[in-house]
Amino acid sequence: MSDVRLAHPWLIFDLGGDMQVLSWAINRPGFVTARRIVWREVRNADLPRDMDVHDWFSRELTAQGYVHTVAFLTSRHVSSFTQKTVQIGGTVAQCVATVGLSNAERVGHRMDRRAMDWGTINVAVRLNCALSQAGLIETLSIATQARTAAIIAADVPLPTGPATGTGTDCIAIAAPPGTDDYAGLHTELGEAVGAAVYRATAEGAQTWKTEIGVKLGCA
Image (cartoon, rainbow, N blue to C red):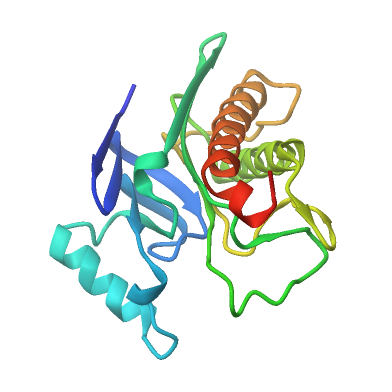
């Protein structure tokens, strides 16, 4: 459906053409038009506390020709990405995700993570169906629900209760522009997006628990 390419420390999700994208990504958040969604892997040493991260990231994106992309930062190895495509009727949802849970949180609580490693869950979804901005907003809510359900099912224990995500998660939804306003759980679109995001996030969470969680007592 679309090309996903690993070029460490970058992961590039080529959408196959210009699409409207809705996200709260560090680069080009909100409603934008983009051809690619990219991830940049970082280590703690790459981002000292006194660094202007936006300025540094802008220079990194410029050097790669990715200024106009929607771009995530992640401390998860980009090679650990998961990819799931689900088709329901004529609706196809393709999800690419990286899942790290080192700074997991339970919604409604905050833990002191200042001396801890950072992780994040970054999810990108490409749709084949045209949506209005209202439809993109509802689709983003379904993807968020699916992400949360997958993390709850992964059972990552915290002092505040089972984790529901991390403090730095981000989700991006890409679709052709259109007039369809609806993407709820009763629709083909809602089912396809929910299934793709849930499966990609669940697989990524299980991989993280196997590789890292055991060391932290989370598996």
